[in-house]
Image 1: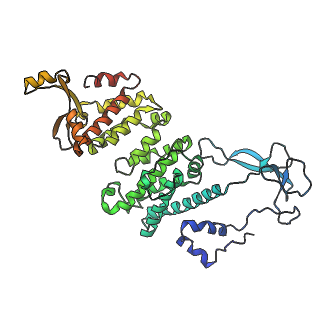
Image 2: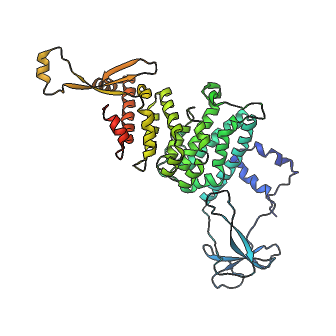
Image 3: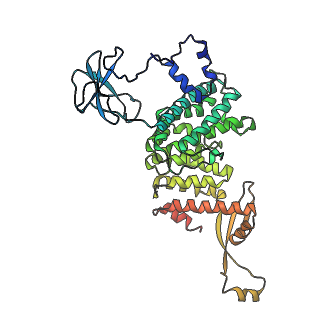
Length: 438
């Protein structure tokens, strides 16, 4: 019997929800009435399984670590054996199989005794506890019963999860700026296997669910209101957890892609949905071709029109290629929308303009050093006001710290990068149109 087992009637057990997550791992054991422990003697009446070493040893010898054993069930005198019956049937490719027992002892049915590093045990404890807290949060968000303290607590937990999966120490840096240089595959795997990713999607959906005709706790449109800034921050953290969990890990990418509709519906609300989608699909041609349609490209173009931010040009650039190889389908879709006359006003036009000098003498002196034509950029701002300026003057004033000119040059640089990706691998649909403009 587990000495730490706490009966349901124990009044102390009712206060579990009040304890922080790092203390709950001790209480987890209190809900388990029986635990398996090793005993030194085989004649112990409480013995369930006996370890039978594959190497020849004296009776009742201790089995050394890192050795192979067979397991005998004492009550039935049968041997533990593997089966081909999957447990994780909901997975596309099940990897977990049930075990059973049989009368015969087979040499191939051996199990390895492996010592688990303490760091792995701690990681598993943290992931398991985090899953329980997030599952509770999902329910509270669905019913709109989450308190301010609970909201702060789950915010801190999500920040901790970002540092955890990124394998980066929390030194007080901005959590949303954390960059993963070397993904920790084992921790990424824990995020999926301990259902943390499932709970993350639960949090992304829960506040917007309609509660039996009473309406939802939040609307996506509300996220622009400063009153809902804490919820917006929670959603941004959720998307950052997803991004780090899928980096360079195909299995998690496939799992997250199953929830593509959820992420797609939340594009454009400044909660990093579009950032996560492009990170997920970039360098994964199979997912990219499956999920990116005209609807998604149109959404990104509309966001570019609404915000005029270069990052949306960067997102479109990422969708053009996979592992430096062009994706013709998405290239054509992006060409169709970006190069249409209706969207000409969101692009910066490039023109060669003849230089007119007021002083003919100055012209004759400088003509050896200066071209007769100069590159000018023309654009229309979000207020429909037309502008034009020589790229040389833009660069000079941007260097001097003029913010508006720096923003124009940055936008133009991202636009040129998008054009390059659209033309990659001889995509003549883009080449033929863009070459006439540059």
